[in-house]
Length: 138
Image 1 (cartoon, rainbow, N blue to C red):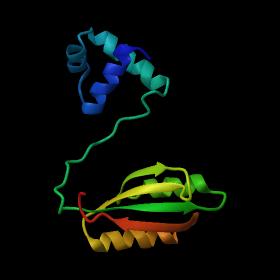
Image 2: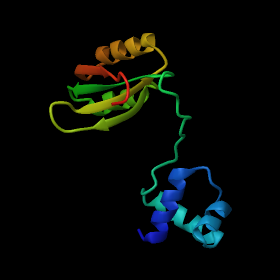
Image 3: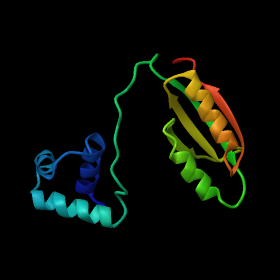
Image 4: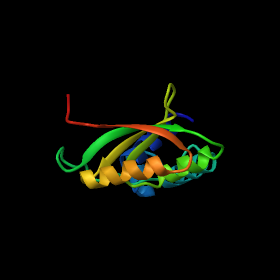
């Protein structure tokens, strides 16, 4: 991956919906260059997909926290896939130490927070969890 590839990826992180002509103009290269670079980055797996960024909510709009998760059993991949499908998780990260995963929680209210925690704890492949609410910025 060269400098142009890195600049292209940086622009796509800012706006994954940017058109090929727009990207070509920003990067100062031909449209065909952008198109072939994107095709190569996608085919090689360097770009695994495109995503949606949601509008940032004000500090009182969402209940936020983290959940540390210990996995168990032979179907760990299925447990992780099930956790990823939950819209209450803003992010899911593999970590080291006592916990296998750390999930960032973002839900609209405490009822949804409770539902999320209860649902995860009942899932197959979840050994234990520990959950913390964020009270506000430090």
